[in-house]
Length: 160
Image 1 (cartoon, rainbow, N blue to C red):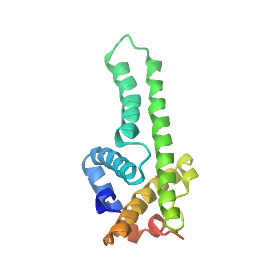
Image 2: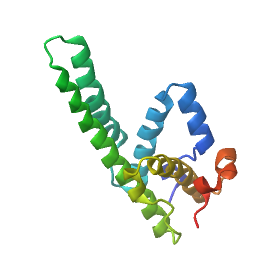
Image 3: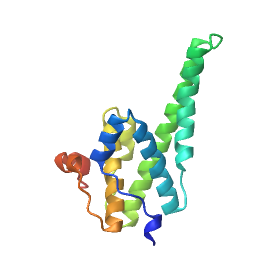
Image 4: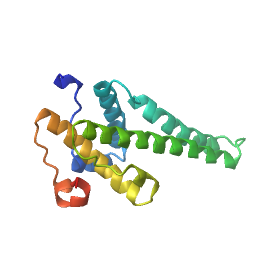
């Protein structure tokens, strides 16, 4: 397999810092690009556009219409829940895909997928997803990844 089909390692600490500094714009780019890389690598899955567009449209459009169009009833904003449901669905698929990468490589699956439904644990599994996808790409390319956050907080990086 050529290195062109492999994704780029993106350490957790870098993703978090760039996401905070950019007001989550980088995180949107991150979500887009990892789905593109995984689809290219696996030959299947959601594209970056298919992952993000329904979420952004589902959340943004109902809220913007509710705010800027006086004829739109206030309850219309509740349609934003459709965007939230979509992102949960796409995250669930992403976590299962990363677990499959690990199991296909003969390694223990690193993510507890059902944590996505538990407040607090959903954040932890999301952070672990960033770390373990980065680590997977780094291992495939024999690239060292220096991620001070993942090293400092073992429950984010230990696959025991």
